[in-house]
Length: 333
Image (cartoon, rainbow, N blue to C red; front, side, top):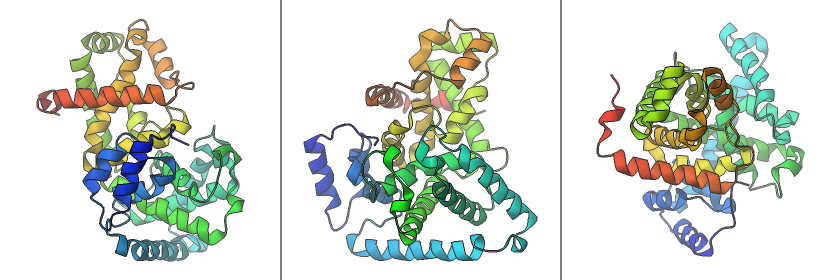
C-alpha cells in the first residue's frame, strides 16, 4: 500500500531516527519527504503532524488521553437522539451520511457499512468541534489516507481483502480517534480552505495560474484563449488534495510528502499541482475548451505507478527551488 520495495539503507535511517528518546522532527521530515516505509508510516505520520509527541516517554500517555477524549466527544455529540440536535446539526449529519458512500467509490473497502459509519462518526465530530467551517464536501476524502494507514497496523494484506469486522469495536474507535486528531492537525494549517467561500483555495488557484504562466507560457496562453479558467478544474484538486485524480494506492506515498512539508504545505501544493498539470502540456495545447474540460475531469492516471508520481514530485521540488527566492510571480493582487 503506497510503497515501492523499501531501500534497506533508508529503512535503517528511519529505524535509527524513530528509536531515539526524543525525535528531531526536522530530520524525520527530510526522510519522509521521499516516502516512508509502509510499516513505519503510522508512527511517522502521527509524529509529523504533532499528534504524537517527539518525546518517547510521553507518547503512549498522550495517545491514550487523546483517544479517550475522542470517545467522550462521540458520547456527547454523536451517540444521542436526533431530537437533541439542532436543525443545523441534523442537516450536517444528513449531508455527511450522503457523502460517505461516495467516498473513494472505486475502493471496495470503503463501501463496507461499518467503514462508512466510522467515517460518518469522525467527520461529524470534527464538524461539531470546528464550527468556523463545519462540514464541507471534500473533507470526507481527506480522512481516507489516515484511515487506511492507521488500519494497516492491524489488518494485513491488500486493502481489497480487508474487513473491518476483523477488529474489535474498541480498536476501531482508537483508529477513528487517530484519524480525527490527525485530520484536525492537517486542517489547522488550512483553516481558510474550508470556511465560507473557501478563500484559501481561491488564493492558491490564483497562485497556480500565475506559476503555470511563468513555467509554460504556451499552455497558459492556450488555456486563456480557449476560455478555460483554472478554478474549473483546480478547485477540486485543492479541495481534495488530488485524492480523486490519482489511483488510491499512490495516495499515501503522496501524503508522505504533504505531511513532511508541514506548515509550508499549502504553498508547496501549488508547485505539485503545476507539475501535475504540465505532465499533459503537449496534449492540452491540442484541445479546445470542451475537450480540455473533459480531459481534466478524467485524467489518464489509472495506470500510474510510483514512477510517474515521483517525476511529478521531483519536478515540483526543482521548480520550488528555482522560484523560492523570486516569488513575485505568486503574489496575489
